[in-house]
Each structure stands twice: as C-alpha cells, then as structure tokens.
Amino acid sequence: MKEIVNQLYETKVKVHDLTPQALHYARSRANPYELVGRSIFVNRSAVKMANLDALCQFLDRARERCANGEFRFVDLCSGPGGFTEYILWRTKQMGLQAKGWGMTLKGEQDFALEKMDPAIDVPNRFQPFYGADQTGDVYRTANIKAFVDLVEAGSQTEGVDLVTCDGGFNVTGDEWNQEDHSRQILLCQVLIGLSVLREHGDFLFKVFDLYTPFMVELVYILYRMFEKIAIVKPFTSRPANSERYIVCRSLRAKPNAQVLQHLFGVNDKFNELKGDDAAKPIISSHATQQPGFLPREEKIKNGLTEVVHIVDPEIVMKEKGLIGPIKSQNMRLTMWQKEALEELYKYANDKARPEYDQEGIRRRCLQEWKLPIPQASRRPPPDTPYGRDRNNDGRYQSSAHNNRFSPYSRNGGNDRGRNGDGDRNRDRDRRQDDPYRHGHRDHGQAQAHRRY
Image (cartoon, rainbow, N blue to C red; front, side):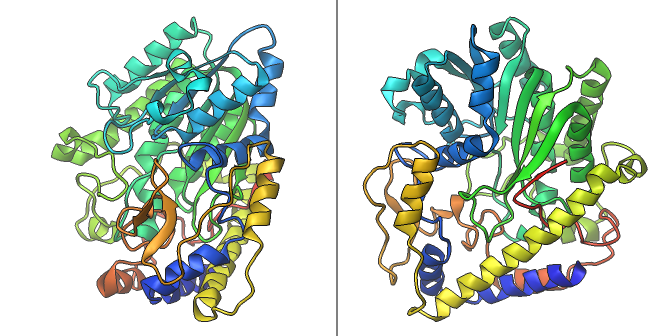
C-alpha cells in the first residue's frame, strides 16, 4: 500500500508542474462527468445531492416513514445551500411535506436562499440559524446547543429524518494532510447529527480520506450506532480528488447522554488547545485560510499537542468488520485517484486525445437522477485562464476565485496542487514516523460504494 500511495504522490507532483493553461484544458476534458453541472439549481452541490439520493434513496425512504406526517431534515456547514435546495425541490415534486433547519457560517459562503426557485417556498420550509453568537460557527458549544434546542422545539422533540453535512475549508500549503485539518469540523457535524436525528434516521457527511486513527475512530462510533454504513464516491465528485461521503443508514437508537457528553468534551479539548485562536472568528471563505492554520509538519516540529483519539484505538482495531473493509476500499480508491491523475496528465500533453461524450453523459446522468435538463453546458476555450467552475450566479470566474470545486487549483481546495517548490519539497520530505498516524499509510482512500 505504501508503494501505491507514493505513486499517487508522484503523479500529483507531475500534475503540479503543468502550466495553468494545460491544466485547465485537461481538467475540462479528462473527467467524463465534468459537465454534469448544476441542472436548474443555484449551486452544483445540489446535483451532487441528487446523485447521492439516487444511490441511497434518502427521500424514497422518507416517503415511506412520513406517509402521514412531515419529513424533517438538517443541513450543516453547506452554504450556499445546494443540498437544501435539492431536498426542497425533490420533496415538492414528490408531494411530501418537508421542514428543514440549517447552520453554516455567515459571510461569503452563507446560504443563498434568495437565489433559489420561489416555487419551492424556501422561507416557509427552511430556517437558517447561526447559533447563540450569530456566527454559524459549529466549533462553539453554545452554538451547537442552541441549534439542537431549536430543532428539538421545531420537531416536537421527535428529531429529524435526515442530516446532511458538506463542510470544508481552505488547506493551501498542506493539502496532503487535509484530513487532519478537518477533524474538528467532522466531529462537530457528527455531534450535532447524533443530537438531532430520530430513531431510524439517516446521516450523510463529507470526508477527505480515512488515514488517521481519529477518523477511523469517528467512523467506528457511527458503525456502532447505525444499522448500515457505506463510503460513497459519487460521479459528481471529481475522480482525481480525495472527497467522498460517509452514508449512515437507520440510527439504532438515540445516543445516551454519556456519548454526547464525551463528544462535547473532545470538542472542548480542541478549542482549549487552540489557545487564543479559539476566540478568533472562523472565516466563511474557500480562498482564505482559517485563523491559526499551520501545516502539520510545522505542528510536529513545534511539538504542539493535538487531539488524535476519540476512543480506545485498541478496541477499534479489533473490529475486523470495520477495519478490513476500510483498508481494502482505501487501496482501491488510491489506485483510482492515481489513474485519474494520470489521465489528466495525458490530456494535458496530447490535445488530439479523443474526448468523452461529456454532454451525452451529462444528459444520461440527469435523466437517471430525474432532474431537468437545461441547455448544453458552455465550455471555456482551451487557451483561456478561466476554469469551468462557476460561482452562485453562473458566471465563469478566474482561477483565483473558482477553486471551491477544483482539485488542482493552486489557490486552495480539496487535494489541490502544491503551492510552489517549498511546499512541494516539504511534502516530499514529510515524516514517515508521524506519531499520530497508524504505523503505515495504508488507509488510503475509500471505495466508491461499500457496505459494512
């Protein structure tokens, strides 16, 4: 496995060395699903949710459970609200009554509810909330508890049927360790999800690898609390990045107070170790690093203490029904990601390379997911410095701003390209004896869709 991961890294280095023009040209052509886009929605994450719903049947299950009642959902860390827009649109099409609550950071990536289709009646069916301090910061205990109280009051203490989470932030300069930097936001999303879900409810959240003990232990908690879990890499998630989703089906029972108290304690420890940075406001932006951001190598060099475990790792490693599938899936997706990056590199160096029928694939996907099919997607000229991604109003933006969905942009994002020779060399020389990781890097990446 170590050899495969090293090959993946070397392929990333090759992609980094491409010119911006070659990179944009290749990126727009190497992915068969690149044009799937946004359909009729304000944000392409809505189509991603449609893809996940088609795979996992969240709303069909909800219709069965809520035949004589109201479907309730929570959407966390997901501005500008693509997941919410899809759920409200789909439930409207199904004739299903729905009510949702959401919390995300105020600012650049806030919910864009005013841009959504008026026909889905967003104001009466969805309530955004920003916590006790009105920032939307899910790291703060007071905000978590205020949000849970709001949802419990609105659902008459019954809880919600579905929780979706799509949080992420800029990790420029330390992309290889995105999983480490995402630990607290993932913990808080799980904490809120377990607090507001009803019995037999479903949970969905985005992750960026399963390398570390912390993440495996977090998945272990979910493994014990839900009837089934799966790791899903949807078609709408670019094959060359590390993004994937953990899907948890049917909560066995509401967690007891001790479980929630323990998770709150872990989050409190995260905030305590931040020191003065804990009081600084979190930034709602995919182009700006968060307060106190520091590459992992620097943290280790400075001897900084971190939260690296949630539960006893020896207990987790004995759970063969969990650990075995994680390892095997990780190996598969590591290989797939490497192959996708190699394909990207080939397209960058061979403009005569045959293209995929991206428009035909787009139409078939939207048909399969029962989404409206708008006019053919535009593509920027191959020599333009502009990427394919769009902002909320659909206009193309320069690479300095379009990196939210770009796995290779030099300005940040999921598995993005290295920021100059210094960062690249530092990553190449990264420590193999990191005391906070398992003894080998063979957790890799998760397979597209595997049940435990």
